Length: 142
Image (cartoon, rainbow, N blue to C red; front, side, top):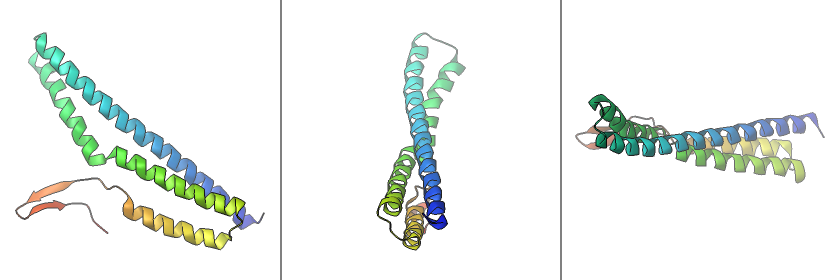
């Protein structure tokens, strides 16, 4: 095995592991937001019934909406899917290089094209501003 091939395999392995970690982190963030939203909504109802301090009820009531807003803007579920798709495509490149003996330069070119494709598809933070003409994204588009 050539040094270039081994180096590229190592780089692919590193990126595959990175995408796997990010998939897991985005999944965890999404689940934490989901279950905390459900729990805070449930607790708000209980606190309202037991006639607790108004600031406790108000804090719990505002938590659900705030968490939904965070999830809407950071789109952890979309990022999880994006990272998973990216990992699968990187694994294909790895297998092509390792088992099909595709030339290193071809895999390197395919990886560059994949990076460009995935960068265009990355789920941006979804900030919108309302204007007189309608909604306009504040995020730069490609």
